[in-house]
Amino acid sequence: MTKIVAIANQKGGVAKTSSTIAIASLISRGKTCLTIDLDPQGNCTDGLGVRDISDDQFTAYNLLDLRQDPNAIVLSTQWGIDLTPADIGLAQKEVELIAAPDSHYILKEQLRKLSQYDYIFIDCPPSLGRLTYSALTAADFVLIPVQCQYFSAKGYKQLLSTIQAVQMRSNSDLQILGVLPTMSDNTNISKGALVSLSKVEGVDVFHSVPRSIKFTESQLAGIPIDRYIQENHSTKERDDLTEKLIEPYQRIVDRLLSLEVAYA
Image (tube, rainbow, N blue to C red; front, side):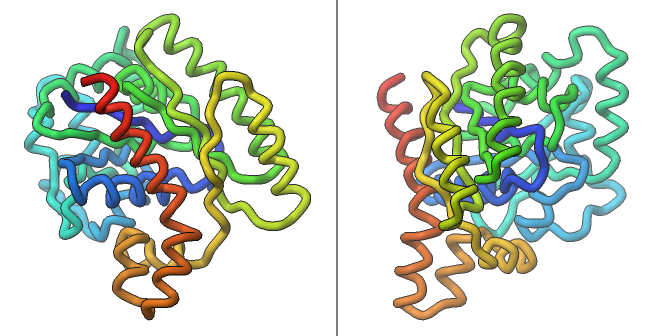
């Protein structure tokens, strides 16, 4: 049965896209997966090496239309990760969804037609608008990347309120997979943010991902971070970078796979 994971936070610059690509890349080594770029900025599309979308290529804009076949919108990437791409046109779709009753259920209905995948990952936009609400309504789990800064850690509680509203109104089965601290360093601010995140009862906090230029380099190259490290560094560098940058994401993958066994 397909498991759908939304990666969400209303704040931008918290490594939602980097995390989406990293987790999808790791899990694609043994499972079939689709990544849905639900951000009009299209960074996930770009980060997976899809740099040009032709005029006749369907995108996430079309996915949010029940008349469209979602299978016809999927692109294959060279990384073994299928992709529903996005571009700026998706911003108009959010406006259209606001005006339509019960439009937050459209994505859920469309994803039911993609049951050939083991996992679907949704890279949400940096807002709590209709696109994010639709993703949470469709998802089985939500992962919350939070930058290790005071205001980021404080602000994520607003997302928790939105998740609770979704659980009450449109998706009672939605579970919080956990919080992923990102861009951590050895400063007191970062340490304080981690303490703050750990105080939210009932929400697991994963091992933090440190700040690193390697994420920017991999995105510019259009290569998932684990593949980028493998292809562009010596053996010793690969071992060090894998432990620091990839292991936190591997723990999330391991958690998903363990839940898969638990729900079997």
